[in-house]
Length: 114
Length: 111
Image (cartoon, rainbow over all chains, first blue to last red; front, side, top):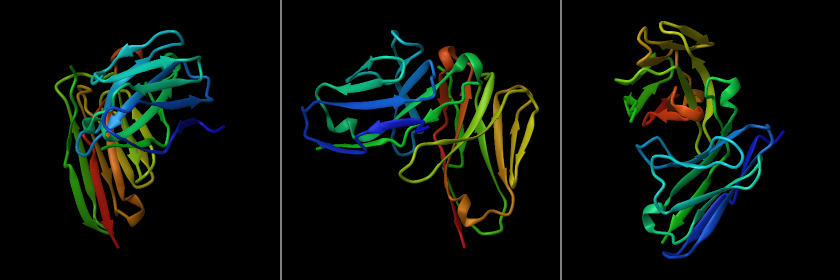
């Protein structure tokens, strides 16, 4: 079991460029999440998908879009990157129907926007 | 909006010392998790507490959930350099398995 995988691990973009961050999980979890982590701010939820076919905004959704491609995969897209989006992005999954909200995290994508 | 205030933000101690990290909120949570994160990696779950007043021990780590389920603490006894990392508390109870995270505590244990 790989758990939660994310690609790429590192990315450098210029302002205005677009990119998609990929996430996949092999634990048959229903729910998936995208967070960004900035120094001193913990983890902030960008978007989540409670189940296949549904997506909802989290705390900081502006500038991002998501796609729940199937039960395994949940992608995060930056349409026009801005320096304020420089951050570390984590994908997570869980099966909240059968757990106390425990989430399993991927290794992260470190994004720099110049 | 539920908020979790975590303190202290930074902790630098010598090997063998004890320490406590606090996580406080004005909101009630149905569960409280503690995660540990090492540089370059994602957070890893340490423990989940769900009952008010609950105490869980994991080797030298002791976790407590407040009676009113609004606060939690993590106590480490005789800290070791291997304990170095970022510790995050997270409260559950909102819809669809979402978590509210504290700001994190960066712990450095010097040999």
